[in-house]
Structures are given as C-alpha cells and as structure tokens.
Image (tube, rainbow, N blue to C red; front, side):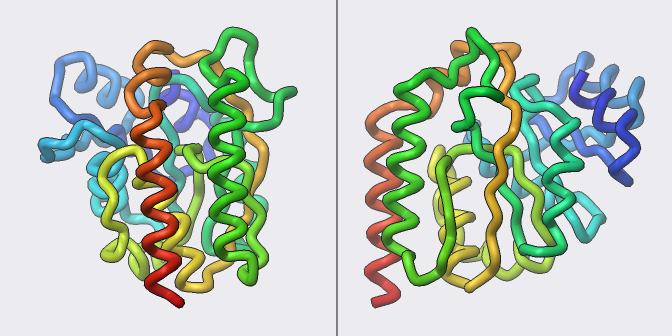
Length: 217
C-alpha cells in the first residue's frame, strides 16, 4: 500500500523500495507498482543503511524518506513539501494526539520520551532558534545538497541516526521546520515498539547530543 499510494499520489518522480534482503515478495511489489528495489548491503539491520543506500541510489534534488510499514500517510507529503522551500529539512512530529491512531505504539511513554529528548536538544542549541518535539520520526523531506553537506559527519548507525542527522543540520546552520504528521498502526507493532525503544537508546541519544555540543564549545 505504501509503494502503491506513493506512486498514485503523483508527487514523486521515482520510488525506491530499500530493503535489507531480497525476496520474491519485494520483487513482486516493486515490479507491480513501478518502484526500484534496492538492497542495502550492510550487517546493520537499522534505518541508517537503508536511508544511506536509498539517498545514494536516488536521483532527485528533493528526497522524502518514510517507513514502509504503514505508520505514515503519503497524503502528508504535500504538507512537508509545502515548507521545503523555506528550509533545508522538514521533519514530521508524532506528538499531536489528534493525529495518532488509537491502538498504535505511540503511547504516552513514547511521546514523553521523544518530547523530552527533543527539548533537551533544543536547549543545547537554543541560539539556533529551532523548535523540536520529536526525535525519532522517520517521515522527513530534505534537499540533497544539505544531506550531502552533513552525512559524512553522521556517525550513528542505530536508533540515534535520525537525530544525529538533525544535530548535524543544526551545526551546519541549516534551517529545520517540524510539522505534525499522522501516525498510524504499523504492520508490525511489536517490532516498532521494542527494536529501538529502550533506555539504552534513550541514554545514547543524550550522550550523542552532549558530545556533539561539547565539541562546538
């Protein structure tokens, strides 16, 4: 459904389906809906190699990244694109309760944790006038030139990758805009809930933010 609606929306020039392993099912979906199937060759099973590979293989100047497990609505792409000419990156936030589907894994603990970490990073770079309320939202749109400028300095490969990307954008003095997006029930709720949502990731993000902030003092 994600691949089909991405193409049907008519807002994109190409759709890349980036996966960790090649399967006949992925082949069938890509062929049926005209997407390009890309296999990320990496031992890591996180988002980092998928995003790095996808951006490298894409051809556009404006790149949209979203999870393929149904947690986001392709209809929000228009909302994100509406602001991309005012910023280098437009990121989604999953903290608006009115836009969170009942039964999804974005419970109060997840919302508060993301909100706390977002405000922590906002405070560290208070002079940059950025406003954040979420640190882990995959749904984002950015310019290729801004990505190319920072990606070599993005060190994280696990759950911190997304926020490391945001921090490097801030350090480069790029403009970031955050917008509320719809958050739906995932195809695999348990995987989303437990893969990276734990105390270890929470403290790694704090350590990452502090480390990068201290290097700039």
